[in-house]
Image (cartoon, rainbow, N blue to C red):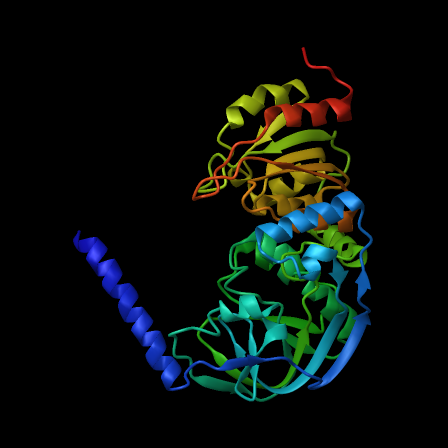
Length: 382
């Protein structure tokens, strides 16, 4: 009872504090770049060709998010890849967002939605500004979103290094949160090892830094999308494979990614699925039981992957060539990994389960999975 009262009181105090800080204009509003600085275009935007089935699936995804009028519902557009050369910016080290003329810049936070839910837009932390007087600075950081989420790291953050590697010629310092996880530091450092003019500087999350010259690489992906242009994904995949010394002659295997140890979005009738999967030669794995190098090797070796929706599916980026089946709860259907497969040229099949409960745990139609397996592997189960 006391704990519940304290929680309610804390929530009300926080709310009042936010209101008071808004009154004194503590929080900056947001704006777009609108032609500020010098813009270098690396690639133009283009429409992705989608099949009728893919368009229907994206519309289903959009309907579950009430985004019928968006590009996400009607198709998919790969935006241009660009580098912005800017002057006199303020860098927020806890988010990677920048501010110009007291306005947070949307392009530095991926989207208005993410920016306004980020700590840069709504934060109690008092960060006193310092100044880096010499040199040019940049970032690929997208915190707090990607702090320990492999999907947001490998799809939203790390591909921005491709833009830096292909546009920046002069010495530049890349600012990165020093609390990044080992796999994040490892992959970032390996990707940039052939570009010695791009130095990484790890800093704490308590700086609001005024910077005279700042290079802002655009995000490669759009909101809700996992699509990566082939040139970007091939560059990223090859370097990650090299960094983990992936063995390329292992026999191929079929794997099922279980979320039974996760806190949410678990398949409630997963045990009913196990006999079917094993009959078709699938191995059941829990990625959290493996170190990251082992996960990369596992996915590289996979010729087929079946999994409920979850961040672990990001690792299909490091499969050599595979078929992917993704389970979705009917209430919230997400197209991120369908679009990732689209960019990689992988066959993708969604299977929609029950609506799911309050933590998105759901059941899947085992017969539909069995029918897909039979159609793919010419095996008639006994």
